[in-house]
Length: 448
Image (tube, one colour):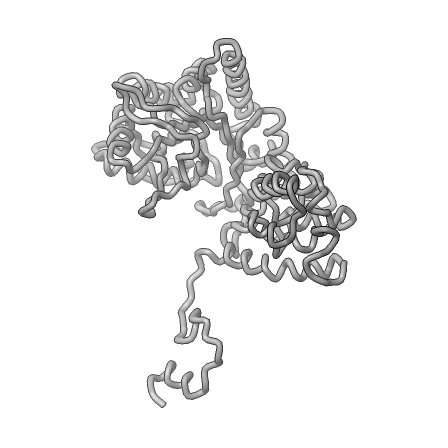
C-alpha cells in the first residue's frame, strides 16, 4: 500500500470523509466552553451533531480520517490493507486548515478525528496528538473535538490526547473476543480495553480535581464512548446488551453506539444480507440502550438466554410491559416516579411533569396528553382515578395486536428507508375512492 502523492487538500478531503462515514458520532458535545479573547470558537453542550438551525442546516462536525492507510486486515472494513483503494493521508497542518476554515464559515461546530493505522499505533497517535496540539495552542481553537484513541498506542500519547480533546472513544467493534479473532485478527479485546480503562481513570481523577480546585475538568470533559457493529457476527441482542451494560457500569462510558453492518467487502467470512443492513435491529438496540441509561432497566429484564433477541414488531419497552402485565395497570395519581418511567409511552420529561402536577390536583387523561404522554401506547397500562381510558379485554394477545398496528408501520418505514418503487397515478395521494376501470386504462395506456 502506497500513499497517493500529489493529491490536493480537496481531493484528500473527498477520500477521507467518505472513508469515515462508517464511524458513528451522532452525539452532543457534552461540554460548555465560552469564547475567549484571542481564541477562535466556543462549545455548547447540546450543540453538536443532529442539531438543526432555523434555516434547516444540520450543524455538525468535520468528520474525517487522518488516513485511510491501515496495517490491519479487518474483514468488515473498507480500509483493510488487502483492499485496492486509493490511499492518502492528511498532514497535521492540513487538518488544522480545514477545521479553522470550515468553522469560520459556520459549516461545522467541531472536529471528529479518527484514523486508520499508519505504520504503527504509536506513529499514528503521535500525528493525531500533534494535530490537536496545533489546533489548541497555535490556532487557539476552543471548539469541540472528538478524537479516536488508537488501541496499542503508548499510554503517554493517549494521556496527551485526553488533555486536548473534549471526547475520546475506543471502538470495541465486535461484542466478543471470538468475533474479533475471526474478523479482526490484528486486534484483541485486551488492546481495546486498556486505553478505555486509562481514559476512565483519567476522567475520574479529573472529577477529584474539580472537587479540590473547583475548576473545569481538563481531561476528556465530555466523557468517552465506543461503537459496536450489529450483524457482522452471530451474537444475539442479549449478548450485545450485556456487553453495553458492563461497559456503562465498569468503564463509565457516556454512550455506546450501534452501527448496522454494511457488507462493503466480498468476503466469505462475512454474512450475506439479502434484506440489506439490519437497520431495524440497530434501532431496537438504541431503544434498549436508552432504557438502560435513563429508565433504570437492566439487560436481564429486557432479554434472556431463552429470549435472546428483540421483538421486531414492538419496541423493547412495550415488549417488556406485555411480558409483565401483572405489574399493570398503574394508577397515574399514585405510582412513584420509577414505576411511571416503565410505562410505555411515558418519557422522563412527561413523568416529571406528572409528578409535579399531581401535587395540586388529580390528573385526567386529557392532562397526560398535554404533558407529552403518548396515550396510544400508555392507555393499556395506566388508570386515572381508577378508570381506564378505553374498554378492552385484559389479555396479552389483544393488547399486543393493538400496539403492533401502530408499531408495524414504523418498523416498515425503518426497514424500507432506502427502497424505491415506481409510483402509479393513484399512489400516495390519500385517494379515498377506488379508481374505476376507466381511470386505470387511462393511466396505463393514455387512452380510453
